Image 1 (cartoon, one colour):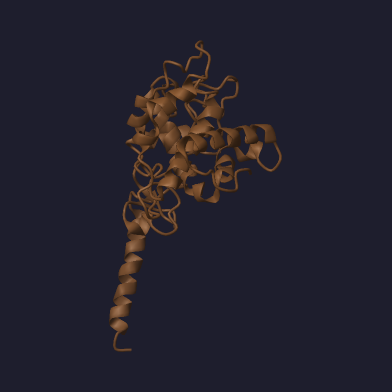
Image 2: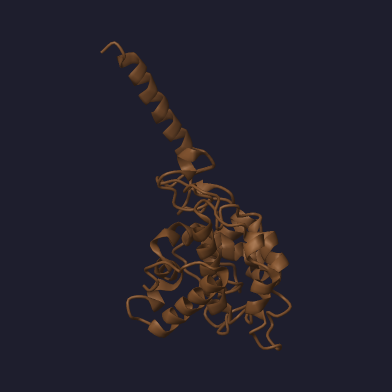
Length: 270
């Protein structure tokens, strides 16, 4: 019992630290941390090992190893090899560029990082597999059907602006008011008042896609490609709901893994 005061003091300090973390600006809301911040296992944002280490849910999580060098992996040949498969009449042909992607990825240092080089390349392959499927080889900037406003009024933190629609835009077709609002807050654009900017500025378009990826998909990469499909469109494609689309995503992923010289791993379907 001679160490009791020391133990009590440590407990008190630990409790104070938790209170400060919860009350401070780093507190996460559905793991919507700003770029380059980790969402800890307890749902708080920060940049130290307490946040980015064991149990980290999203952001530049530390899993050992340096991952892949994105600029070296996503070469002109790789990027344009995808885009060149779209017809010349596509609106995305002059919109999506490798330069815009690399500019955007500079704001997300955790992308394809934190694990082994193989894991990093798998994440790059997975990201571009979903982008290929969502945009038709970088053909589409916005969703074809623009009638649905994608406004969920129950998210009172992100009220829909009058006359605005939050249908899919950008490489991963960002949708819904709550995603536009949160992405705009973190990336610094008016997501609710001007959602069209995601279809007008290619760097913001890629930042919005990477924002969604790092907050919702990056953390499930260790579970296999199937988990990434579930994180993006699980309600519509997983559990036998739309196997053709799910398998199309898997096909792109396998193709890009082969191009990057890595095994795709297991658990490819959802």
